Length: 182
Image (cartoon, rainbow, N blue to C red; front, side, top):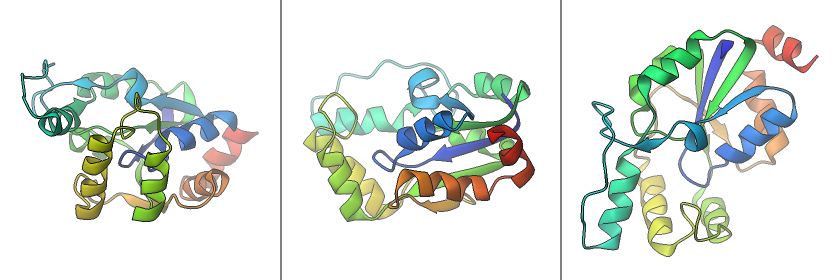
């Protein structure tokens, strides 16, 4: 999608969608991975999967989180299209290790536990992290720092979104960021 492509990752409630919307507002090309790419599948093979019959609600939520993936071939196809000077792929994928090295940079949004809890408490129940059982999983993953991409640049996402986006853009090639916003 871009001559330069960047991945913006993070756990639920860290601000990926908010950052994506701010980047779009500023005129950047954005792929909303959680909205347009994600599906339930095997993180190793990419084969689509139906959730198994699980009795405990916590097991269902955990299974769903562990199998939320992006299609690697489609990500590669999107990365090969150089229509835009710069593109940002925003979202979470349990198989991102299979394609993260293809990006020019990877950013992980990071917030402290207090901010995360506050954000999750404000979510509607039909958005992941809005139900107490989902919040518990998100908070546990946050505490253990599980599922964070190795080598990703950590971005303090506790600050206002305009500053978060400014920080991300400052870490991208300045000439590309300047060309895009012109």
